[in-house]
Length: 396
Image 1 (cartoon, rainbow, N blue to C red):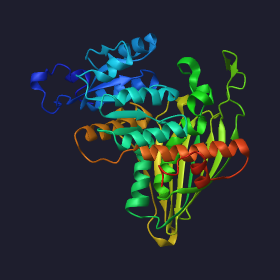
Image 2 (image 1 turned 90 degrees about the vertical axis):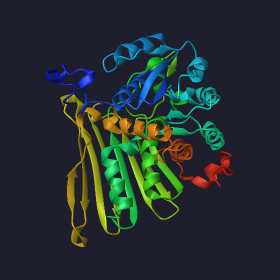
Image 3 (image 1 turned 120 degrees about the vertical axis):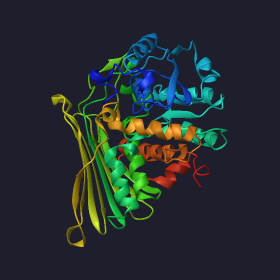
Image 4 (image 1 turned 45 degrees about the vertical axis):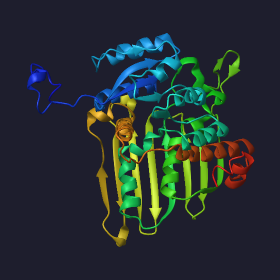
């Protein structure tokens, strides 16, 4: 705040002490400069430990936009790569961040892995289970590391919820988990790929893998059974591109049973006038409610709270939780910033808690099983689903 205030801008670099920052230690190449790619560029500049060295996208307009927007928070000159191979193999680049559309992830990743550089791969890791399984297999023998972009585990309310439920054991033994998201429809994308399941992987894979990742981490067991009901009720019913009509689901109810007896449910609604997320965890000694509300119509700041109800078993409390405003405004309410911090920590050789390829795979298994259940109207036995998809050996 202080170093960027108008009254302090006369302080030159030679007089910076409190404001001084270490020079970035690593160079990044951003592959895909759409909405999320530009968000990663912004938070990398804010964190300051790694510098965005170059960018690549197949769309010239996206590159132009990214370069222009980047000037608002960095004076660095960006390299514009002519092709994917050049972006992945620049000797000046230490790590790669893949932020391309879902359906391109697997093919882009194969080119990126030939570089042997550390890789950040946006969620979902793939659109289908076979590609996801291949990524897990490749990651196990990869000379460097691959981090999956499941950044919701870094949201302030979920960091606190995990601390209370798993570290402090404030709720005792977890028995049930309920998560919901109510929000507006998918935004526009270049080529409108997110309006079609064959490009996005389907709504429960594209959007909801975040939540299934959170639920899996809280349950601390393998899912055994998934049942889901949902469909396309409101959004994009009249939308078509190149003669193809949108088939993207806009609401769903998902029930998940786990091997250890934990039961969970997830609710999605994507035709709401505001954003609301809620997680309710109930154990044998208490209940936790984590909420986020964002009324973008009023341009109001989001509010996030974590409440613990112990009844006669102990102290109850309700806390407002947040990151500093500058970070919360940088993207996904600050979670992308801390996701970057974990990535750079890995580059520095530190051990961190971040989404692995295997965890990304399990988030997709739950999502894909739920989508199959919606399509058939039948509950899905997860082990049978795994075997049918030829994943048994990988996940043994």
